[in-house]
Image 1 (spheres, rainbow, N blue to C red):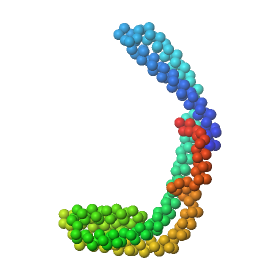
Image 2: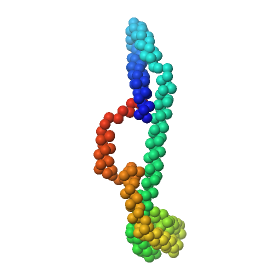
Image 3: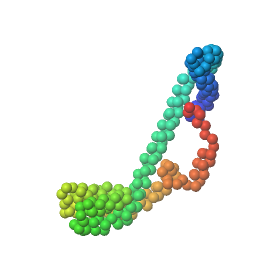
Image 4: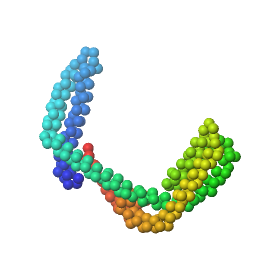
Length: 253
Protein backbone atom coordinates (compact mmCIF):
# COMPACT_ATOMS: atom_id res chain seq x y z
CA UNK A 1 0.00 0.00 0.00
CA UNK A 2 2.74 2.48 0.99
CA UNK A 3 4.69 1.61 -2.14
CA UNK A 4 1.67 2.10 -4.39
CA UNK A 5 0.91 5.42 -2.71
CA UNK A 6 4.26 6.91 -3.76
CA UNK A 7 3.26 7.09 -7.43
CA UNK A 8 -0.43 7.62 -6.77
CA UNK A 9 -0.23 10.56 -4.35
CA UNK A 10 1.01 13.26 -6.80
CA UNK A 11 -1.58 12.53 -9.48
CA UNK A 12 -4.31 12.13 -6.86
CA UNK A 13 -3.48 15.48 -5.26
CA UNK A 14 -3.43 17.22 -8.64
CA UNK A 15 -6.74 15.75 -9.78
CA UNK A 16 -8.52 16.49 -6.51
CA UNK A 17 -7.21 20.10 -6.64
CA UNK A 18 -8.56 20.52 -10.16
CA UNK A 19 -11.90 18.98 -9.20
CA UNK A 20 -12.11 21.19 -6.11
CA UNK A 21 -11.48 24.37 -8.10
CA UNK A 22 -13.92 23.25 -10.81
CA UNK A 23 -16.51 22.59 -8.13
CA UNK A 24 -16.15 26.09 -6.73
CA UNK A 25 -16.65 27.54 -10.20
CA UNK A 26 -19.75 25.36 -10.61
CA UNK A 27 -21.21 26.80 -7.41
CA UNK A 28 -20.70 30.32 -8.75
CA UNK A 29 -22.27 29.30 -12.06
CA UNK A 30 -25.35 27.93 -10.32
CA UNK A 31 -25.80 31.14 -8.32
CA UNK A 32 -25.58 33.18 -11.52
CA UNK A 33 -28.09 30.87 -13.22
CA UNK A 34 -30.61 31.84 -10.56
CA UNK A 35 -30.16 35.47 -11.51
CA UNK A 36 -30.73 34.63 -15.15
CA UNK A 37 -33.85 32.63 -14.32
CA UNK A 38 -35.31 35.38 -12.14
CA UNK A 39 -34.49 38.30 -14.43
CA UNK A 40 -36.78 40.17 -16.83
CA UNK A 41 -39.75 42.50 -16.67
CA UNK A 42 -41.60 40.45 -14.05
CA UNK A 43 -38.52 39.04 -12.35
CA UNK A 44 -36.56 39.94 -9.26
CA UNK A 45 -33.61 41.07 -11.39
CA UNK A 46 -33.54 43.38 -14.38
CA UNK A 47 -32.96 42.17 -17.92
CA UNK A 48 -29.55 43.86 -17.90
CA UNK A 49 -28.55 41.98 -14.72
CA UNK A 50 -29.65 38.76 -16.33
CA UNK A 51 -27.57 39.45 -19.43
CA UNK A 52 -24.46 40.27 -17.38
CA UNK A 53 -24.97 37.09 -15.34
CA UNK A 54 -25.26 35.04 -18.54
CA UNK A 55 -22.05 36.53 -19.89
CA UNK A 56 -20.29 35.72 -16.63
CA UNK A 57 -21.64 32.16 -16.76
CA UNK A 58 -20.06 31.66 -20.16
CA UNK A 59 -16.68 32.87 -18.90
CA UNK A 60 -16.79 30.70 -15.77
CA UNK A 61 -17.98 27.68 -17.74
CA UNK A 62 -15.00 28.01 -20.04
CA UNK A 63 -12.67 28.28 -17.04
CA UNK A 64 -14.27 25.22 -15.46
CA UNK A 65 -13.95 23.17 -18.63
CA UNK A 66 -10.31 24.24 -18.95
CA UNK A 67 -9.61 23.00 -15.43
CA UNK A 68 -11.28 19.64 -16.00
CA UNK A 69 -9.41 19.25 -19.28
CA UNK A 70 -6.16 19.23 -17.28
CA UNK A 71 -7.11 15.97 -15.58
CA UNK A 72 -4.77 13.31 -17.01
CA UNK A 73 -6.39 10.89 -19.44
CA UNK A 74 -5.04 7.95 -17.44
CA UNK A 75 -6.56 9.16 -14.16
CA UNK A 76 -9.51 6.74 -14.07
CA UNK A 77 -7.24 3.76 -14.75
CA UNK A 78 -4.67 4.89 -12.17
CA UNK A 79 -7.44 5.46 -9.63
CA UNK A 80 -9.00 2.02 -10.25
CA UNK A 81 -5.65 0.27 -9.86
CA UNK A 82 -4.93 2.01 -6.57
CA UNK A 83 -8.47 1.33 -5.32
CA UNK A 84 -7.92 -2.39 -5.95
CA UNK A 85 -4.64 -2.31 -4.00
CA UNK A 86 -6.39 -0.49 -1.16
CA UNK A 87 -9.28 -2.95 -1.18
CA UNK A 88 -6.89 -5.92 -1.16
CA UNK A 89 -5.03 -4.50 1.84
CA UNK A 90 -8.28 -3.89 3.73
CA UNK A 91 -9.43 -7.45 2.96
CA UNK A 92 -6.09 -8.89 4.09
CA UNK A 93 -6.24 -6.94 7.35
CA UNK A 94 -9.81 -8.03 8.02
CA UNK A 95 -8.95 -11.64 7.19
CA UNK A 96 -6.01 -11.57 9.60
CA UNK A 97 -8.13 -10.15 12.39
CA UNK A 98 -10.82 -12.78 11.87
CA UNK A 99 -8.24 -15.55 11.73
CA UNK A 100 -6.47 -14.62 14.96
CA UNK A 101 -9.74 -13.87 16.76
CA UNK A 102 -11.20 -17.22 15.67
CA UNK A 103 -8.03 -18.93 16.87
CA UNK A 104 -8.00 -17.24 20.28
CA UNK A 105 -11.69 -17.09 21.20
CA UNK A 106 -11.98 -20.86 21.85
CA UNK A 107 -9.07 -20.60 24.31
CA UNK A 108 -10.87 -17.88 26.26
CA UNK A 109 -14.17 -19.76 26.18
CA UNK A 110 -12.70 -23.08 27.29
CA UNK A 111 -10.81 -21.43 30.13
CA UNK A 112 -14.01 -19.81 31.34
CA UNK A 113 -15.92 -23.08 31.12
CA UNK A 114 -13.33 -24.91 33.21
CA UNK A 115 -13.02 -22.06 35.70
CA UNK A 116 -16.80 -22.07 36.23
CA UNK A 117 -16.75 -25.54 37.83
CA UNK A 118 -17.38 -24.19 41.34
CA UNK A 119 -20.15 -21.91 40.07
CA UNK A 120 -21.86 -24.84 38.35
CA UNK A 121 -21.52 -26.94 41.52
CA UNK A 122 -23.34 -24.22 43.49
CA UNK A 123 -26.42 -24.70 41.30
CA UNK A 124 -27.05 -28.28 42.43
CA UNK A 125 -28.52 -27.55 45.89
CA UNK A 126 -30.60 -24.75 44.35
CA UNK A 127 -32.00 -27.11 41.73
CA UNK A 128 -32.79 -29.73 44.37
CA UNK A 129 -34.51 -27.11 46.52
CA UNK A 130 -36.54 -25.89 43.53
CA UNK A 131 -37.64 -29.45 42.80
CA UNK A 132 -38.81 -30.05 46.36
CA UNK A 133 -40.83 -26.87 46.74
CA UNK A 134 -42.42 -26.99 43.30
CA UNK A 135 -45.64 -28.69 44.60
CA UNK A 136 -46.10 -25.79 47.06
CA UNK A 137 -46.01 -23.12 44.35
CA UNK A 138 -48.84 -21.82 42.22
CA UNK A 139 -48.25 -22.30 38.47
CA UNK A 140 -47.29 -18.65 37.93
CA UNK A 141 -44.94 -18.73 40.91
CA UNK A 142 -43.43 -21.98 39.66
CA UNK A 143 -42.86 -20.51 36.19
CA UNK A 144 -41.11 -17.47 37.70
CA UNK A 145 -38.97 -19.60 40.03
CA UNK A 146 -37.90 -21.92 37.20
CA UNK A 147 -37.15 -18.97 34.90
CA UNK A 148 -35.04 -17.35 37.60
CA UNK A 149 -33.09 -20.59 38.14
CA UNK A 150 -32.62 -21.00 34.39
CA UNK A 151 -31.24 -17.47 34.18
CA UNK A 152 -28.81 -18.11 37.03
CA UNK A 153 -27.55 -21.30 35.40
CA UNK A 154 -26.92 -19.26 32.27
CA UNK A 155 -24.36 -17.18 34.19
CA UNK A 156 -21.93 -20.07 33.73
CA UNK A 157 -20.43 -20.78 30.32
CA UNK A 158 -21.49 -23.94 28.47
CA UNK A 159 -24.54 -24.86 30.55
CA UNK A 160 -26.98 -25.42 27.68
CA UNK A 161 -27.60 -29.07 28.62
CA UNK A 162 -28.49 -28.06 32.18
CA UNK A 163 -30.80 -25.31 31.02
CA UNK A 164 -32.70 -27.66 28.65
CA UNK A 165 -34.52 -29.44 31.46
CA UNK A 166 -35.44 -26.16 33.11
CA UNK A 167 -36.77 -24.87 29.80
CA UNK A 168 -39.05 -27.90 29.50
CA UNK A 169 -40.15 -27.61 33.14
CA UNK A 170 -41.08 -23.98 32.62
CA UNK A 171 -43.10 -24.84 29.52
CA UNK A 172 -44.97 -27.56 31.41
CA UNK A 173 -45.91 -25.24 34.28
CA UNK A 174 -46.85 -22.48 31.83
CA UNK A 175 -49.24 -24.74 29.88
CA UNK A 176 -53.03 -24.88 30.30
CA UNK A 177 -52.62 -28.11 32.30
CA UNK A 178 -49.57 -27.70 34.59
CA UNK A 179 -48.10 -31.04 35.69
CA UNK A 180 -45.88 -30.76 38.76
CA UNK A 181 -44.59 -34.34 38.51
CA UNK A 182 -43.62 -33.89 34.87
CA UNK A 183 -41.89 -30.58 35.68
CA UNK A 184 -39.99 -32.25 38.54
CA UNK A 185 -38.86 -34.99 36.15
CA UNK A 186 -37.43 -32.33 33.83
CA UNK A 187 -35.62 -30.69 36.74
CA UNK A 188 -34.20 -34.15 37.57
CA UNK A 189 -32.80 -34.18 34.03
CA UNK A 190 -31.16 -30.82 34.69
CA UNK A 191 -29.62 -32.18 37.90
CA UNK A 192 -28.31 -35.25 36.08
CA UNK A 193 -26.89 -33.04 33.30
CA UNK A 194 -25.23 -30.88 35.96
CA UNK A 195 -23.57 -33.87 37.60
CA UNK A 196 -22.25 -35.10 34.24
CA UNK A 197 -21.13 -31.59 33.33
CA UNK A 198 -19.40 -31.10 36.65
CA UNK A 199 -17.45 -34.34 36.31
CA UNK A 200 -15.69 -33.32 33.11
CA UNK A 201 -15.30 -29.68 34.18
CA UNK A 202 -13.43 -30.70 37.32
CA UNK A 203 -11.33 -33.23 35.45
CA UNK A 204 -10.54 -30.60 32.82
CA UNK A 205 -9.74 -27.98 35.48
CA UNK A 206 -7.24 -30.36 37.03
CA UNK A 207 -5.63 -31.78 33.90
CA UNK A 208 -6.14 -29.22 31.12
CA UNK A 209 -6.53 -25.80 32.72
CA UNK A 210 -2.88 -25.41 33.84
CA UNK A 211 -1.65 -26.21 30.32
CA UNK A 212 -4.31 -23.96 28.85
CA UNK A 213 -3.24 -21.09 31.09
CA UNK A 214 0.36 -21.55 29.98
CA UNK A 215 -0.69 -21.59 26.33
CA UNK A 216 -2.81 -18.48 26.85
CA UNK A 217 0.10 -16.67 28.48
CA UNK A 218 2.28 -17.53 25.47
CA UNK A 219 -0.13 -16.16 22.83
CA UNK A 220 -1.98 -13.42 24.73
CA UNK A 221 0.52 -10.82 23.60
CA UNK A 222 0.40 -11.84 19.94
CA UNK A 223 -2.66 -13.42 18.29
CA UNK A 224 -4.70 -12.93 21.47
CA UNK A 225 -3.83 -9.28 21.93
CA UNK A 226 -6.97 -7.86 20.32
CA UNK A 227 -9.26 -9.75 22.72
CA UNK A 228 -7.49 -8.80 25.94
CA UNK A 229 -9.64 -6.75 28.35
CA UNK A 230 -6.69 -4.33 28.66
CA UNK A 231 -3.53 -3.85 26.66
CA UNK A 232 -0.22 -4.43 28.48
CA UNK A 233 1.32 -1.09 29.47
CA UNK A 234 4.30 -1.30 27.10
CA UNK A 235 2.09 -2.13 24.11
CA UNK A 236 -0.48 0.50 25.10
CA UNK A 237 2.28 3.13 25.13
CA UNK A 238 3.48 2.02 21.68
CA UNK A 239 -0.06 2.17 20.29
CA UNK A 240 -0.66 5.59 21.84
CA UNK A 241 2.58 6.84 20.31
CA UNK A 242 1.57 5.60 16.86
CA UNK A 243 -1.92 7.09 17.11
CA UNK A 244 -0.55 10.45 18.23
CA UNK A 245 0.97 10.99 14.78
CA UNK A 246 -1.08 12.46 11.94
CA UNK A 247 -2.56 9.80 9.71
CA UNK A 248 -3.08 10.83 6.11
CA UNK A 249 -6.36 9.35 4.88
CA UNK A 250 -6.72 11.68 1.92
CA UNK A 251 -5.90 8.96 -0.61
CA UNK A 252 -9.12 7.20 0.30
CA UNK A 253 -11.19 10.04 -1.14
